[in-house]
Length: 485
Image (cartoon, rainbow, N blue to C red; front, side, top):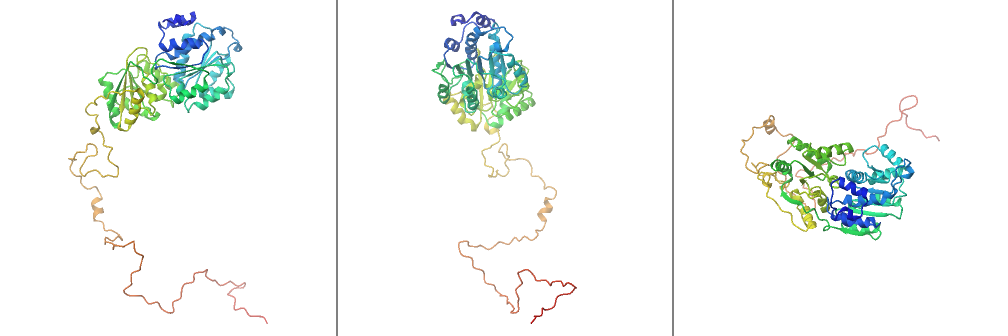
């Protein structure tokens, strides 16, 4: 089947031909006809199979009748809203809209956080038909009343499972409240959990479900590998694999942003050109890091899961899970960066002892076991520091904390002052053994051998405030007061 058989207009067929595409992918074959029929669609397909073009092409065709070259902003209201969870994914969608719609007189723009909002206001004020946005920055424009969504005809939620997750649901709810009730809604993603599917059905009207692959399935062209290695030896093993396999490009995933920065610095110290991308970096820094990686100026791109959504890197050969994700579905998104557009790829996971349960959850989701490869000599657990010993358990005398073997070094001589402290007499401390005391019996004072006698004229001390003589007016103390009869 060709793109022409999907009843696309000549302008779109020309744009597709300019990009070198001949045959549509399965998700495009199944998604384009119902979208052109103005039906709500919930599409699920493997990452890298053309989901973005699956909704971009029919969206452009539906808006083509309203295309015009007028300079008046009133002639260019927002008719299509595309929401994406990350800036990188929003930029990729905006690029697809620009490429496929270059022969149509339709305007589009992108708004996301991390950059100056003023140019975005100016673009919106000039009028656009297609708006690509992240939820947070779109809410900023709504609060400042710089965007009007009252004429939106098509709503697209890309990577819908993340967009409809509990973290994004309040923002999505606020955005949906200002959209027209009569609209066409499209949801596309690589994974759909049962909870997200139920939630999506509440937002769609009789949706058409499209699944062109087993649910939550990774790309078939990706080879999975697992190395069981201690956490303290992961970086050394990663450097070893990069050098032995002559890796030119590798996308390495970690969980935390601070870990991404630290791993990139350590790899650079090891002689491997690496850079990092995560949400704490500015938009310019993220774009520069991604550009360096795509143009082979950086061998390793260390990223958090923010880069697992929407990054399209041509012929990326390796994806490394330096740390396994807590959510099994995120594993599918991570490795989906490789094995795209018919090109093979490899997904390598470095699994520590505390990540075995995460690996089991991933294998359960994939419904198959991932091959475990032999760890090269020097990276096995016995070569790493033994963390299994409790902290309060003393190490054997004469054992080295790193290898566990007897320490062959001679005993050190006492430091300065140690010999003096050993011979220094104790002050007020008695080394005599204290008598045993039975705490189960009531206390009875021991009888004194020589009881002390208390004198009869012993007066107890006065416990109140002492009486002081009152000073007289003319000096001296007043005499005894005489009674007046």
